[in-house]
Image (cartoon, rainbow, N blue to C red; front, side, top):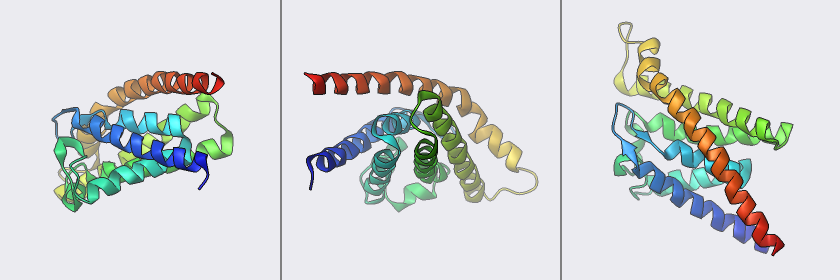
Length: 182
């Protein structure tokens, strides 16, 4: 294995651990308000689409295997059966969308932000549909209610977390670049 491959694998594991820690920082609501999405954004911005998505998958597999890495210390297959389980799966699609957009349009900051925004919309879609499945919604409580409960309260906080992730990732990249030059 090449040094850069080993280093990338280590970074994937490290960012999976950072995502776990960020998921534990939580404000309980119907769908918990955590720093998970902040970690997902940072992971993609620092590692790029390919390794960022791999890191997200590693994080989910560790949780699926039973380590309490999800919000509210949930773990195992049961964590995916909760109201927020669809958002966990949505994180993978956030990564895939980001990866596809940056692969096609390059890695300029605006392209990265567009990739994160579109990926987040896809994550919201997965999460909202799964929320509706878990709660068995009907005509009385439908899509609009689910969007008001599961998406609307999170749009502004997620945009703030995205902006912070851009700032943090630029600092991390600058720090990494300056050490290479030294």
